[in-house]
Amino acid sequence: MNVSIIKIGGNVIDFPEKLDEFLELFAQFPGKKILVHGGGVMASKFGESMGVMPQMIDGRRITDKDTLEIVTMVYAGLINKQIVAKLQGLDQNALGMTGADANLIQSRKRPVKSIDYGYVGDIENVNIDFLQNLLDEDIVPVVCAITHDKKGQLLNTNADSIASEIATSLSKKMTVNLYFCFNKAGVLIDEKNDSSIIPLINEDIYAELKKENVIHSGMIPKLDNAFAALNKGVNHVWIGKAENLLFAAKGKVSGTNIETHKYDLY
Image (tube, rainbow, N blue to C red; front, top):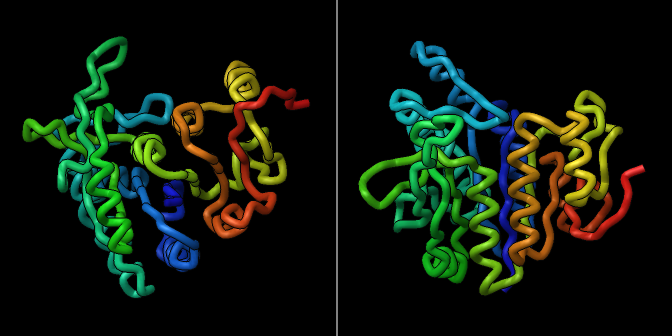
């Protein structure tokens, strides 16, 4: 079986028109598929309206008790169910869930080292049998960025990490392609210029661009997860603009392809 894990993020979720356009493309995407989503910008807006200001370090959210309640409401409630309803309207038999549902994703609370991230979960296990059963029934799983520790505690977990771990776990049984879709054309030399896209990137180039501070903030966890997935058996990893998803599925040049081969950027 072939399956595609598609993670949607960036400001695509925050604008109804862009989300609708993406979901129409997603509905046309061929084969078995799983959609993973975050919603950090919307969660931040809701938090600010309730007097809870977002705290971010290197693109990762600090999650105290109040923030955990907010992200659970926004990710698992508003965003997840809006996406599921829209997909049902597009004849996609979608099922929305958190990592707690059917013990889908079990995590452990991140230990405190130099930074205390609060109620943030690092993934330990993915229930791939449950996912495979859903895929066999032509159900489209829609997974949000909330997991659990199987001791009654919900945890906020990076959506890129969830997509990567689901892809890695399923790759033990099937051929998996992983797509990170957001509002940029791909990995860029100049984040303000979509024409500065890097079509291919390997770990050496990634390390060099991080050192030069060309790649920073939220792109760091995205690329960390992309390389982790590729190195653990995922067939192909792509990062690019949500509107180019179908081009990526057809193998056309668009976005950034993640590679393990060695070559120079310049």
